[in-house]
Image (cartoon, rainbow, N blue to C red; front, side, top):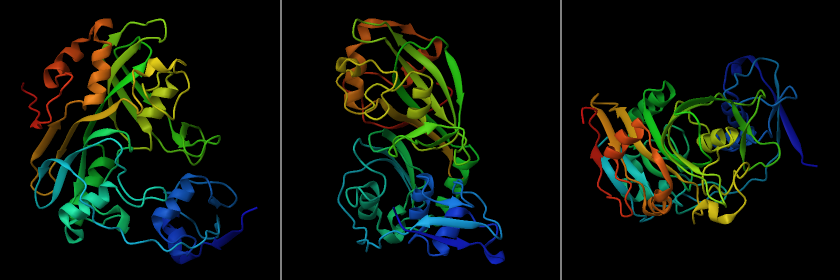
Length: 353
């Protein structure tokens, strides 16, 4: 049985976010560590779990496990290649490659995007709005195996503005996903809260519990592919995020009984035969469109990014089974060429095209 410690909230701390209170009260070495423990359900308030943004109140009793202190090594700059599509003195936009973790964590202390940004920009030219040395430059994240467009900030001013833009939903983030099964409707919305799974702490799940966070995803069908003896067909969709929860698209599409092809973690409702994953060993998920107002100049920036080679090959393998593109799919096929050797050139998307 793990040893636990508790703190009582006094008047001077009332109104603080739970993760901030835990760090300030010495329950965890950092706010990020507190947030991770809260998301895992290891922290309780008056005996019940609460989300990390919960505002503590005078008299609340916050309880957490006693963690063994570990001296963290400094985050080192590493010469990891970056595919940069836009850069100025305030921010940059890049296309993240597969297998690249966004920031250091317990399992990955090096070889992350933060290590690469430190090498490219230098620590003095990266925002640190999250107050953690292992989050420098980071304003949002992509899963390790998810590829595509994302932003990073160089200054605190830009970092705060971009994070606020994400929060108020003015950043346009769209993903290409290939899912198992044939979606019957051309458009849809999944509005379902997400929390840590109770059966597997590495997974998230749709749950109706106090610690769950609102999550909203919309999708549009681009193309459908007929079923074969060892699969139940496929649907290529564009997913748009209105919130940014951990594994959100993967969890929501699994909840809709159409999990992502190749996803090693969320396998429920997926065909059992290995060939149904089309040779992929990662989820078919690519951040292909990103649009936002420049936080300093106000200029509108819109980017589009072709599929990486492995996802493009998987799509080519089932091209002969196409049931036809939707009208929206035809429009998007002019924006991106789903070719076996996609261009790595970035270009600004023009709505007039």
